[in-house]
Amino acid sequence: MHIKPVIFQEGQGFYDNLADTFIRHKKGLFILAPSGAGKTYYCNNQIEKHWIDGDELWTAAGAHPDGPWWKESIEVMDRIDMRADLVTMEAMHEGFWIMGLASYWLKPDAIVVPDWETLTANIQKRQSGSGYDGGATSEDFAQVKTSIMHMSRWQESHGVPIYASIDEAASRLTADVA
Image (cartoon, rainbow, N blue to C red; front, side):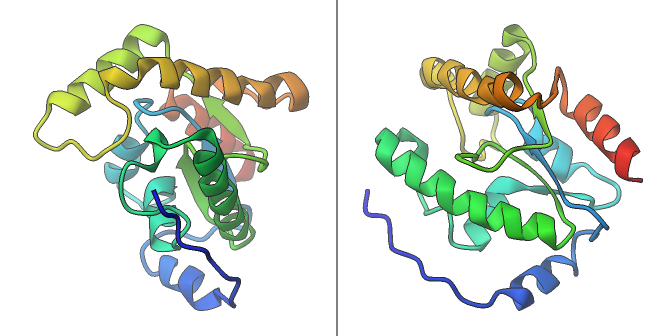
C-alpha cells in the first residue's frame, strides 16, 4: 500500500469546522479501545455530539488512508498511527473528545477492553450485518489480541485506567471534567 506523504499546515479551520458538529470542551480527552469495543456505535448513537469517532477524525484529516491499512506491515501501521497521534493531540488541545484505536506515542486518558467473548461477538455481528463499516473481522482475532496487549502497556507504564465498556470509561472521564 502506498501511503501518501503529508505536510504540516495551519489547521485551525479544520478544528473549527469540527465544532460545527461536535461539542468543544475545556479539556480534550482520548479513549483507546480495540476494534469491536463499540466506539463507532457509541459515537453514532449520542444524543449530544460530545465524542468523535477517531476513524472519522483521522480520515478527514488525512492521517488515515483509504482502504484496509490495518492489514499492512507493522511499519505501515506504525506510520499511520503516528500521524493519527498528531491529529488526536491537536484535537484534544482544541477541547475535543476522541475515541479510537490509533495510538503510537500519545498517552490515552482511558483504555477500554471488553471481555473477549463480548468483543468477538461484536466483531462477528458487525461483520455479518448489512452495515459493515470496516475494521477487524473474525479473521483478525489474533491481531485484535495483539492490539489489546499493546494497549495494556499504557496501564503498566503510565497507570492509564482500563474499563470494561465504552459507557463506563466515558462516564468516569467526563465526571472528572464536567
